[in-house]
Length: 62
Image 1 (tube, rainbow, N blue to C red):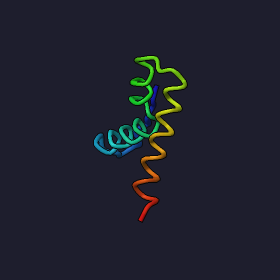
Image 2 (image 1 turned 90 degrees about the horizontal axis):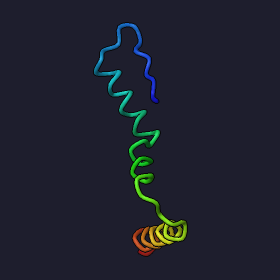
Image 3 (image 1 turned 120 degrees about the vertical axis):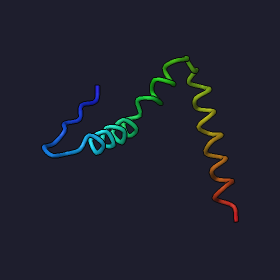
Image 4 (image 1 turned 30 degrees about the vertical axis):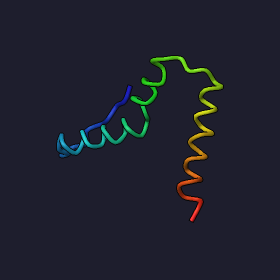
């Protein structure tokens, strides 16, 4: 559970913005989506390798 302390004189908008930033940084939605379905470790590793190859091809070759 995320807890945001609202400081004295701080607007709700600013506190909400801090909450959203903290929420995204922690990665709660990403974690929930990944836990929704089981993915085999071999498939996860394969996806990592394919992503690394894609990034290398995109940025590595000039």
